[in-house]
Length: 164
Length: 164
Length: 164
Image 1 (tube, rainbow over the protein chains, first blue to last red):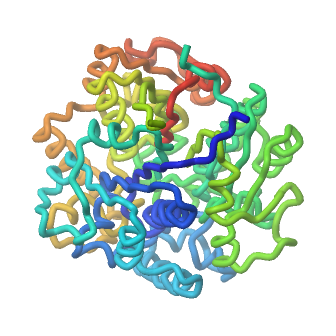
Image 2 (image 1 turned 45 degrees about the horizontal axis):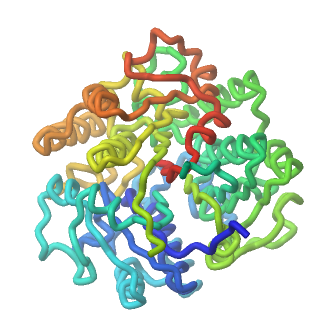
């Protein structure tokens, strides 16, 4: 039998929108709940999910999802081009947060705390930290270490890499 | 020789735009054509690709691709900011569908039927199904099962996970 | 000890914005610097990163990153909706290029040359080449081969596939 159960995942979160960040968090949390080793490497705009001042203010990227903005997905008749109108992202964000709460999916900050408490590792990408000129004090306390891409690969030995 | 041929892929489709959905379908179909086991896990906005009322109405996300909207890629001189103008996504969508057809790449609904007929598995993400309040009857008949993230990991034993 | 070091990565670049292309290039370059075998498969809009006329004119996709456009990330107070206003993508692009340069990250064309010189392989997706009606002469000289999805899977034997 060649199908070995998955033992370890290395999740890369590279997008900074609310809908860009949640999939990686949900996959990391799901892994920990299955006893799978999990770490998350936050890079590019995704880094903001672990920056204290930003992490709870992420927005839904409606404009990148023309046919499928949240309000529409929820059955409301709304021309999809409204995604580009001021305020619509805020509205979609508000609705997504409401729906997440109903599913017992916590806000980003709490979710990261939960994953960290469950043994998940939280890493920040060094090049991005330098690019955004961030300091240690800018990050949430769950951030374990700043890693170079090379160190990320080393820590991903034996892991399934999932780039989100 | 340590390079073992790929035997199984677990593809996650998380985006709902036409250009967000096709790569996953093309990779799943290509895997089946090579005799590689393939399953697709539709989550977040990507779930709409298997919802009957939505699957054949997905649009190209021109605004998220500022320099490279389809018309421009096809050599027409068009200011890229037009991506944000009403109708442009519809136009890019029309052109992309035309080009897909010329390459014998079927519309989303038919493509999923083809992948399913070839033995590919079609899964829906439970949290997303709950969030969008969808019922079994809302899905195309090819949808095999609704899975939790944990079940997805179990079914991905021995597979290469590809998050698109 | 079951954790075998990563030996090979197959990176798929599917997005055509500057912030969509860089992560794949950075991961390929980081792999080569660690002695990890690396190839990049450019597909969909990502293909433009190896098209001579396009590769050095990619733009930041500000509108897809509503809360986190580059200027804002750099601490400037700017309403995020401005991402949709003509010129803002150009401005974010200018700033991102500046920051990349400070980090010694080269422009896309040079970066691909560097990865290729370091032994990384550069592949173009056949279906996309056909869709955009591109010829061999349209590509940068580092492009090694045009591959079908099936050939991509074959060449990815033993590799970690990373879809960006």
